[in-house]
Amino acid sequence: MPKKEIDKKEEENIKKDVVNSIKEKVLTEVNKEIKISIVENTKKYKEDLKEELLEDVNNEVADLLKKEEKRMLKGKNAAIFKRDVIILLFFGLILYFGYCLYDVKYFDFMKSECERNGNCYSYENNNGNNSDNNEQEPAIVKDKDWYIEHYGYLLDQIKISLNADNVSAYYLYSTDRKVSEIKSSMLLNIAYSSLSSKQIKTNSVSITVEGEDLKNTFEKLFGSLVNYKPSSFTYNCLNFKYSEDKDRYTADNNKCPASNNKIVEEIDDMYEEGDVIYIITNAAIYNESESSFYTFDNLYEPEVTGVTESDFSSNARKMNRYQYQFKKSDENYYLDSIIKLK
Image 1 (cartoon, rainbow, N blue to C red):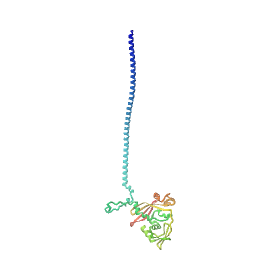
Image 2: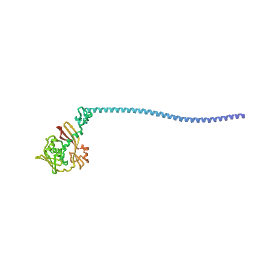
Image 3: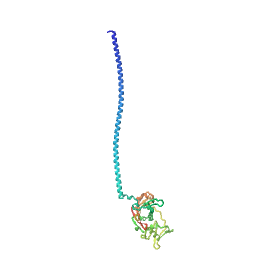
Image 4: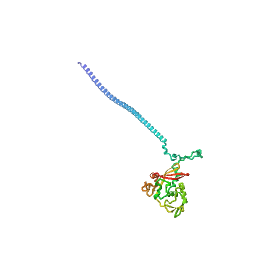
């Protein structure tokens, strides 16, 4: 083969090798670029897909929460409705039974004494108006305080004054007593307490009271002389002797020693029914040296200890309880009986 042909053939082969080498390099670079592009696109797709999935999941969860909230709210509203219906029914029953109790006058016990007895009244002029300013006079309610103010003196008038260290001092507190059943000496003691200082004549030796003075005072207190019987009586530590010849009561002028025992009595209630005024009291014996209260039922064991006399009101329910009845006669009230309630 001629040399010229050989060179030409070799040149062609060299060209082919160069072209193949370049082609291979280009293909390698292209494949590399394609791989990088595919990886990047895959990552981006994954991220986009992830975001879309998260968004879809969040939307689904939100929808589920809204549905559940509506369901729970619907159930809660139903429960509230049921509760309100039950409350209304219960309130209606209360109103119904309240009306029934009112209809049978069950609540009359809450009225004051004057309301129950129809004694409440007000002072008004003929046309019902105040003469000065044409305003209606305020109603005067006869409650406990009103009675104490106007009739509290009734209890003060019948207080006996006997030596509290002597059991006889508790005679009136031992049981029920009608005035006709009370000892004459006790009634005279009460009458003596109402005498004026001018009617009691005192000197260093004796104390004297004229029978006529004591008799008149007795009649003013008890309304008559039916139960008046001249006799000896004791007032505190003074022992009065009656002289029928002189119609006079006389006692030695002794100074009475101080006593540790004291009868304590307070008004708890006061009201009027018909022609009778009732005074309800609590009473006990206070021993200052022992700082104790005794009841009249047991003079040996204290009912309350470690107290002062001022503590009586707070312990009154533990003490004895009495009802004084004063009957009206000739526009005045006189003691009729003493009832031991407790």
